[in-house]
Amino acid sequence: MLSFLLLGVLFSCKNEAKTATNPTQDNAATEEVEKQGQAFIADDGSTPNVLQIAIGSPDHSTLVAAVQAAELENALVNAGPLMVFAPTNEAFAALPEGTVDDLLKPENKDALANILKYHVTPGNYSKEFLKKFKKLGQANDQNVTVEVVGEDVMVGGAKILASVPAGNGIVHVVDKVMLPTTE
Image 1 (cartoon, rainbow, N blue to C red):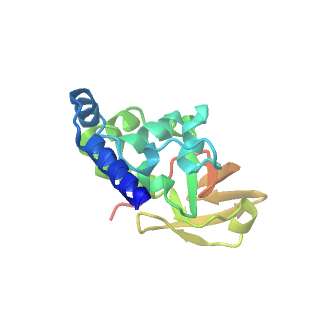
Image 2: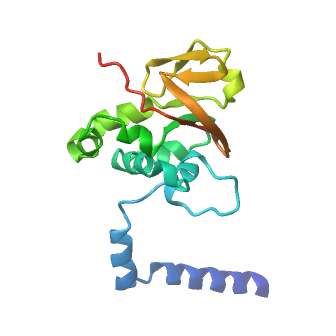
């Protein structure tokens, strides 16, 4: 009986501690509201997901900036599996001058998201396995062609340069920004 009484006292103390307010904590909580979701949870113990791989790559800083501008971080950390065809900074630099700056503007968020989703496919296929495909269905509901040219695998005209396994799929580094067809 005494143990039930002690448990009751402990639980009531914990509940009181939860209801106490701290103005400093309230202000900090309001400032952090912008960045919520699974993409913003620190996890040093598991295999990096496709977003973490891009963030950790100095060759993909433009891609990461685009993902952030389109607010797609949480989509890239879901369980997947996801194949991300990740254009390098050089691939973005090859676009006509001003294109990237224009796409990063808030008013072009939907167009940017459409382009980025065109670089994502459900699945986790190696470069070798992709040679068996003619088309892939992309996350923006369009198809992209797959071609084999010699030993190279081309997806939407972009050559796969390297592949990095991720905890929720695979990142295929590509040499070109693939642009979806406009309908």
